[in-house]
Image (cartoon, rainbow over all chains, first blue to last red):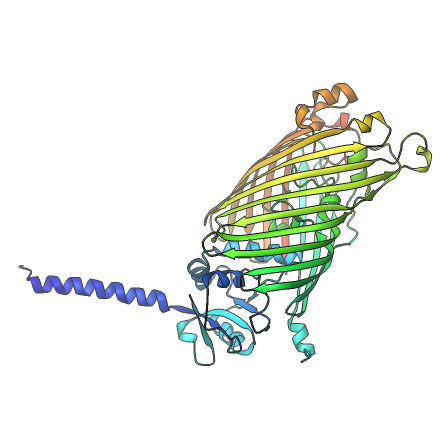
Amino acid sequence: MMRTPNTKHLYILLTMLLFVITDIKAESHYQIVTHPSVNEDSISKNYLRAIFSMRPRAWSNDLIIKVFVLPDDNPLHHSFAKEQLGLFPYQLRQSWDRLVFSGTGQAPTTVSSNEEMRLRIMNTPGAIGYLETAYIDDEINILQIK
Amino acid sequence: MWPTAKDLLDNLQIQGFASQAFMATSDNDVFGNTDEGGGFGFTELGLNALFSPHSRLQLSAQMLSRRAGKDNTGVPRLDFAFLDYRLYSHEANQFGIRFGRLKNPFGFYNDTRDVPFTRPSILLPQSIYFDRTRNVGLSSDSIQFYGETSNAKWGDFAIQFGIIRPIVDDRDTEISLLGPRLTGNLSPDVSLIGRGLFETPGKRFRLAVSGIWFNADYKPGVKEAGLINPGSIEFSPIYVSAQYNTERWTLTSEYALRKFRYTDFDVTDLDILDFYGESFYFQGEYRFNHKWEALIRYDVLYTDRSDRDGSEFAALRGKPAHSRFAKDLTVGLRWNITPRIMARLEYHRINGTAWLAPLDNPDASMTSKNWNLFAAQLSFRF
């Protein structure tokens, strides 16, 4: 069968479109979210990593930071840790254990599902966590990473 | 606005752990009588609370019970209890002060050495984390300053510096530092401790340098008047720690150079003591998946680096040369049965007895130079 230049272009276009779509999907599959009381719209990656390493204790408005995470072996937790913090779940767990058992800090609260994460973020002033996009509504703030 | 009772309760975290080990040795005793078929002499229990009544203030405490050989009978002790006040905090930069009984910050593992889940193995590398003089190293009454800063490109820097009063009044420490015959007591003198830690942004590399300048004074017993003077002991180790992390591998190595100096005892045997001890280990941990991990480690201790094979010591004191070094090859397996339950198996092949506890092995001439240790442990956390 003879392939016309037009179908060739179409193939290229379709392939490109596919890349764009998968890219959008990867970007928007989950978001970092906070309780509306947290008066930040965007923070640096560095600050985000410090927050999930449980080092800063309060937001700039003095509200205590409450960190929520999914279990260590949860795929969303793994993606979040790797993509947003540049850390593996075992590294986070080790640094939390070091804080807790030397008395110098807390561990985040582990929730069992996206649904529980949504409820806890919604009802806890100062809360930060991450959610699959489908669970996000306007009662929850999305935090952008600079 | 004053916080309500519910707010206060929300800011309280309580955690704990319980762990039981079985140990068997071919010769020599580790944590009880282990060379006659093994024993269940190693039990660790801990309960820990952290309370933050205010965004700048944290209070934390941990009770620990440890049953391990003759010097650790399982009587609960206060491991730490302190107040932490954050003087400055802006995003990833923090500076604060801690006051009370604190864990001594040195090396990668000392701060959490009694928590099985935080250790790479059932027994920590004994060359660095001695269990025989553990109470000296463990925690101390202190004032500590800490600072942390973070750079997007370079990574995180953390520093801790403390003025401390070490805990030296237990029998195993006194025997380890002064021998079994003296009946007086050691008392702590002002000492210093510090650690600097650097981590690249993904914690791929972690590097630490720690140092202690530890001072203790000896008060002779009643019957020792005229035989020995109130002398002092200076112990100043420096530790260099390095770690490399990937998804599956963690490679760790630590090196310690430990200076000992005894002065003013007016006993030649003690006052000539001015030497350096040396320790190091190389360790690889491999994660097959969330559940299974393997460990391999080679750990070396020289009590006196200018007499590594102990021959000078043996000639001078008539005690075995092998009591002055220990080379320990360890392999281990870790099974995370659930996030709360962990099981471990471990095998050590050891040449030398330098880190054996003298209370459990009172007669050095009865110890064996080449020996094996097998250990199994089940740990639970909540």
